Image (cartoon, rainbow, N blue to C red):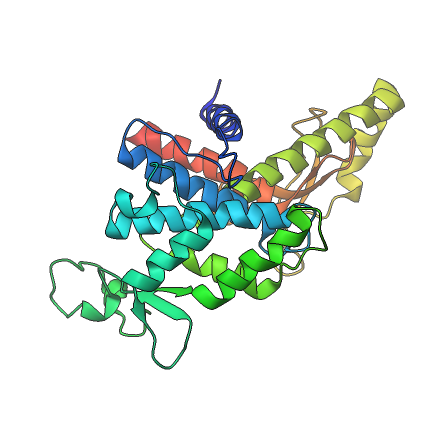
Length: 315
C-alpha cells in the first residue's frame, strides 16, 4: 500500500468510527466519547467540520436540519469546553448540553457586542494586531501584516437560536424545514475559534477524495473503451496520435508537451495541453487512444506526490 492509499484507508476507517458513535436519545445529538479531553475535543471539531461542510452552500438538502443541529452542538461543545471548562458543557447528569443550552452558556460567559445585539465575541488569544516588528513570536514577515484580521470568534446567538427553532418542525414531522443560509453562515463563523479551525482541512479532504474518484472513473471508462475497440484499433489509433497531437512550439504552443505514455493503455498517445504547476511533467489532457482524461486537479495531485517522493529521496 502506498502512502496515498494508506491515507485514504486511514480516513475511511476514521469516518466509519465516527458514524458508529452513540447518540443521546433525548436530544438526538451524537455523543462524543474519548479517553482524554484532547481526543474528545478533536472528535468534536471533526464532527463539526464534517457536518458543516455537508450543508455549506446546500442548506436545503434533505436532512440538513438534523445535520445543522449536530454540527452546532459539537461546535459549541468544543468552544465552551475549551473556553470555560468541560463542566460548563455538561448538564447535571454529565451529558453534553443541547445546542440551545450551550448558547445560554455563551450568553453568560462571552462578551456581548453593544452595537450588534445578539452577537457575542470570544477574543483571539493571539491577535495579529499584537505583532510588532522584531517580535520573536512572529519570525515571518507576512505574519506582521497590519491588515491581517484578528480571529475573534463572533457567535451570533440570535441567528443560531432561530436556526434551531427552524429545524424543529421537519425533524419532528410537524412542518417544513426552516433552515436558511444565514443560519449556516453563523455556523461557519464558529470555525474561527481555536478549538475548531477544522473546516479548511475538511474541504481539502473532500476535494482530494473527489479528484481521486473522478480520476478512477475516467480510468474505468478508458478501460471499457479499450475492451470494445480491441487491440488492432488501439494500435491504429496510437499510430495516428502523432499527427493529431499539437506539440510544444515556443511561439504557437509554449505550454505544450510531447506525447506522454498513457497510464491506462500504455501507448505514447497522451496529448497534454499543458503541464502541472510544479513542473514535474505531469500533463493535463486526454489520451488519443483510450480517451483517458487527466484533469488539472488529478495532475496536481500526481505532481505533488512525485515532488514529495523526490524531496524525500534527497533527504
